Image (cartoon, rainbow, N blue to C red; front, side, top):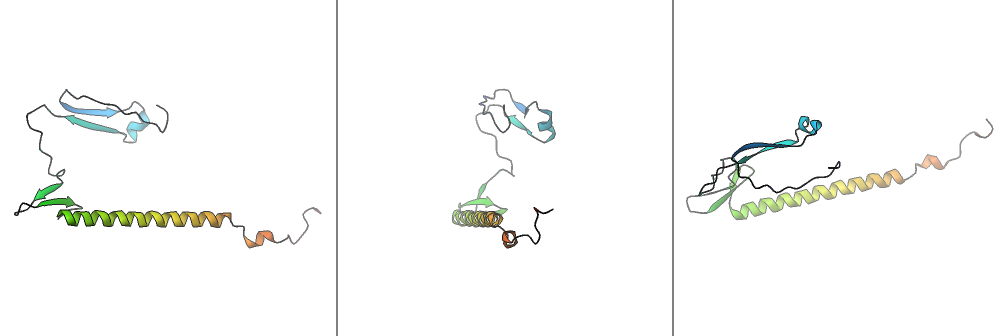
Length: 125
């Protein structure tokens, strides 16, 4: 592969266990560019999610609660929270773009003192 490129593979996992996935570039391994994946034994039911991976629960009334940022939210609260985070992200993006474009414009402008003639003649030296 060329630098900055990637390859997508499809894997049919039939051998249970935890496996290491990496490339053979030593610098990549030292930089942490490796991962593991686990293949579970085939069973009639899917394995349960670990408690850290569960994304929703149900309360006593049977309403679904979604875990978001460490809090249990109902669907409407989760939608409001996600919309708020999206809007905050857009505002930050626009702010960064305005700042970078302002800096680019300021770099293009010539300083006022550059238009003045030198106080002595350079050609006479």
